[in-house]
Image (tube, rainbow, N blue to C red; front, side, top):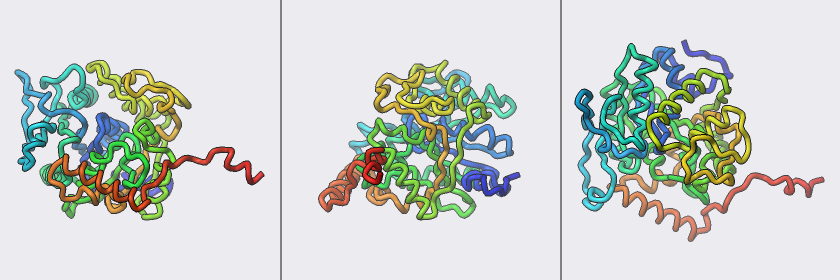
Length: 365
């Protein structure tokens, strides 16, 4: 039964409402974004919720194929009008991935999450993950696919997981991270036309980890303040080191790493923060390209979940407005570039934002 305590974040009250039976959990657009849903999975399952997972990560679905014993069917082939994109861009098909399908030894988190869930919950195996590439869809395409999932699975709520905070960037900040993938997801979740949907939640995990991607902490915190003012902030919760949520998440990540060579820096930051690490820490089992101590600055906010209303986030997003109606990924990037250049020409592009330095307050002494 859902609690009514005022200390319970609104996003958790929404997801655990007795009237919510099935939840669609999606990655926002990063490689391991959907993996962060393991912070919620165990608790939601024990509350009797049915969970549908769509990875929406950086996997190429065609790296998965049917094995002799386990099929890997295409469930969503898309017609694409842009022939250049069709020739050079990633596949916009969606495949159903279960443990036992053929997969890459380098990167196959969808397969490994499915096999992890099979090992933890054998009574409901085989578990299914929808695998699709976050660098392949336009907002209209993803809206259509999510509408199908909501209809096919009788979904009552959608919960999007973003690793980092670049999904909160409106588009006028000095650095945006990976704005297209996140804006496509937020647009799609906000646009699914289904009366049965009771909640559309975006959760940020690893808050502050997008520094290496040009997103400043000040811009991220300002975004939280602006979402609060707009009525779209749905609360936050900290992950305690010995909590069942962190234990389940850590076990899942360890399972993934036993079976593939790719490592996620952001996931390492979340686990390091949950364990009490602080400062210039290079997380264990991190990929080599993003382990500069100057950008790997671990702090407690990385072990928190911040919740937001996807519809309010969508209305606030300049990027979402710019890419609306685009018919190809290439066109979305062109529109983003044009929008940013217009802001710069009109001097509305924000300078690099920084948190106050102690020296700033010396003038008041």
